[in-house]
Length: 550
Ligand SMILES: [Zn+2]
Image 1 (cartoon, rainbow, N blue to C red):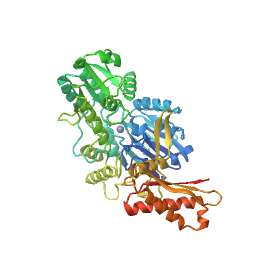
Image 2: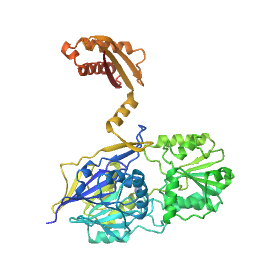
Image 3: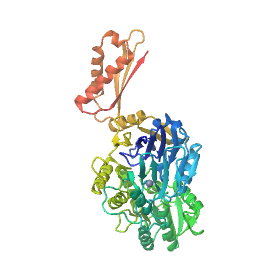
Image 4: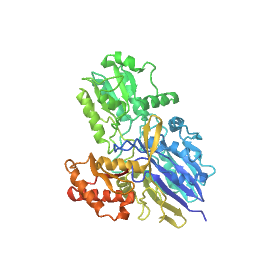
């Protein structure tokens, strides 16, 4: 009898980002994608990665990492993974170039093996993954048809069905249909846009909209888009060329990615088009276009600095036009709003929502998701890549396409789905999942503990109240205090003495034995202060008791 196959996510089920799936059979493991998530809470966290402890503890058993495409939410955590789990990575060409740069920066050695659609990888594991071309918002995107002892698992990766892709590389729907005919045991499909009805527009429609905007512009034109969206960049370059504008690249991510894409032949630009910052400053506004990263309002990005008038190379002036050629990722609206306000204050016209498609999504909408379900005709369905609402909606689309009750599996990170001869079931035992936070400092990325992030959140929400008590080391008698200080605590001004009185009363109630124990004293102070806040204002500041022994 064929051994069961288990599948679980370390990330990507319940959030947009940090996608990472694990497959296990006969004690052997394969990983699909290993990405990061960009947090939208201003807590000094630059990057969130999935907790990879489960894989680290089984490092000898991991035989392959299959990467679908080069977006950060699919490759960004590879340095974390490969520094702990040295497995070969089967990765499409453009993703490989991006991952290689990231790994070199992190000083991590990796065995990256380039793979093209139609090739099968996974030797040494019970999984044979065939790469299948899909269309998305980055070159070389692939889905995976993974042959397992429990049948074929078809994983779409991130995809849309673009009938007129810029590079002419269409989604291989014929292959998906053929797989459907021979039997797909489990379909895993991108849920990001499950709530949008209809079908997504083709990337090629953005070109005409950009051309129109460029033709009407009198000042400089700034276009912000994701640095990895090479086909968008190609279209911006063409619009600039058609109007005789030179093109300046702003931002490290934009410069690096464009040069990688040029080197590998994914972009073709006339040699005169690109210009440096020095040349750009001397050009008349009518002759310059600028491509910049920072579409999500990231405070350190080039666009953000432009909006604050703090960019070293260039400043936005009245008459300039700024096009945000991107989607607002939920949670980033406030930060993006600040950037748009800043640009408007400087006199620029900002186009972000427009009658013309200045941006199209890289993700399938309901119509495309249902088309894949109809072609693949899976026995079981697992919606992936999305918040729970997206997964649930995608499951409803699957039900509408005839995937029967009990065959759509709504999973959270850590849930384990097992496929065996008896069918599919979610195991009672979950695997350990979590998040690892990092912040960027001069030394690169440094991991910060989740407790630190939790403290920052508490401090941001309600502030800090410090209670200081000085005691005699020999007798335990109070020498001074308790004294109360607030930082960022609303309603504490003028109430410090009263809070201190409450704290003193709590000390007076303690037995002499308890008074001799500094940790019990701290606990009593903390409890008294918390009770005061609960009673008086309902606020919950962080309370930090400090007992000094003299
Ligand atoms: Zn993607």
